[in-house]
Image 1 (cartoon, rainbow, N blue to C red):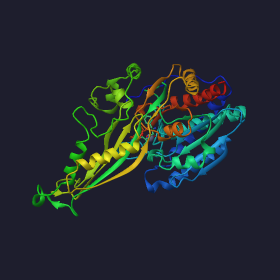
Image 2 (cartoon, helix red, strand yellow; image 1 turned 90 degrees about the vertical axis):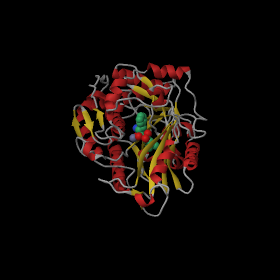
Image 3 (tube, helix red, strand yellow; image 1 turned 30 degrees about the horizontal axis):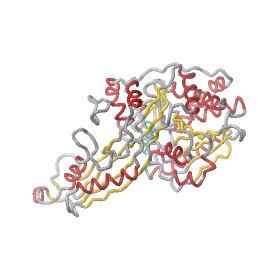
Image 4 (cartoon, rainbow, N blue to C red; image 1 turned 180 degrees about the horizontal axis):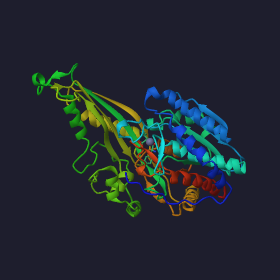
Amino acid sequence: MPYTPTLAWKPLDGAEEAQLVAAHAARMERYAAFLRIPSVSALPEHAADCRAAAEWLASELRRIGAQRVEVSETGGHPIVVAERIEDPALPTIVIYGHYDVQPGDPLDLWKTSPFEPIVRDGRMLGRGSADDKGQILIHLAALEAMLTVRGAAPVNVRYVFEGEEESSSVNLEAWMRAHPDRCTGDAVIISDSGFFDGNVPALTVGLRGITYLQVDVRASDVDLHSGSYGGSVINPANALADMIASLHDTQRRVTVPGFYDDVTPLSDKDRAAFAALPFDQVAYLAGIGANTLYGEEGYSSVERRGGRPTLDVNGIWGGFTGDGSKTIIPAHAHAKISCRLVTDQDPEKIYAAVEAALRAAAPAGLQVEVTNLGNGHAFLTPLGDPYLDAAAAALTATFGREPLYIREGGSIPIAALFQRELKLPVVLLGFTPPDDNAHAPNESMDLGNFEGGIRTVIRALDAIAALD
Ligand code: BES
Ligand code: ZN
């Protein structure tokens, strides 16, 4: 991936700057220590590591001076909560991040091991450096500086750091309902998204929702000789390929009946905002080693990614996949499929529609099992919200240019949950651009964005305190 050098960020005027500079080396040590804990939420063998990461965070919060620090049980990986209530008359800001990470593999493509972080070329390299441990630490460093220097935060803050975001936050909604006092406030800041590109600051005002499913098909008890049986029985791998192929038409639209029913069409204003983004197609393709753009006809790349729903196979397997050849008709075949959704699609409704479409496309006699592995609603927030404006002013003051307002293709299920269930304004204030390799080998965080992020959070909380 091409590395864009850091734009200088503007130091703070207040005494926190000296504290942050003095604490820099210790901060980097702690950053690396956090990244060394392989808190992969999706893999059961890492459950103890997830708990260790939660405990590590809790002890950091206590060290800094947060109050009511707790590792709260969910039935899955725990949620770390803490707060600093300075004065009930001040606004209360809920700050969300996630300490779980994606698996490290494929290991052979990493320059270092994913859980042995190193600093190289001005970046912290390691799984979770950007998504999302680094962004949690931005908030902790900001709080530490303010408490050390002023003895208080400018507003009340409540921290909610979950451990299952990368596994669709399956226990979060129930936890939120059971612990309303730990996650309510006047507004929410989520730092799990990023800049548009390199060091160009951005505020994410839209995220896609998601429904994730697995399909398992079976036609016989055992693999069969492909000479003796080929052509005379259902081949589940062929059938699954046909079923999946039937889900798109030649314009690359999704054919699932009802799929687009609740899609909010892009307005002329939406399309103008997408068109105004400085999207560099050549750099975009070069960055991922691809040679062509692709997608639904009639839409630009930024529209396809941020404003249109999609259906994609995440993995497909079955039959013989070893070296050489083995002539069989596999007994079974499998695929994992995700749909990225936009407002106002309902993930459960779309899941049911995709399941029905897969079943309808299956040949008679094929056993089809479909399992829903997670759902999350899309998120869209209006411009002009005072909390969003406070974050924008902080980004501008720190990075020397006004943020872009972007709609991202990824999903953060809690964003819609805060907005829909708790009716709170949600600000997605994140600091990592797409070239951070999140979910991929060599994930890294630009340390300029990391340091600038800390200054931005301090400025944003001060700006919120100054709102009428
Ligand atoms: N940080 C991402 C979400 C994100 C991605 C925001 C790209 C903005 C741009 C988050 O950690 C993530 O990966 N979420 C999952 C959620 C899913 C498992 C429900 C995702 O989008 O795949
Ligand atoms: Zn992620």
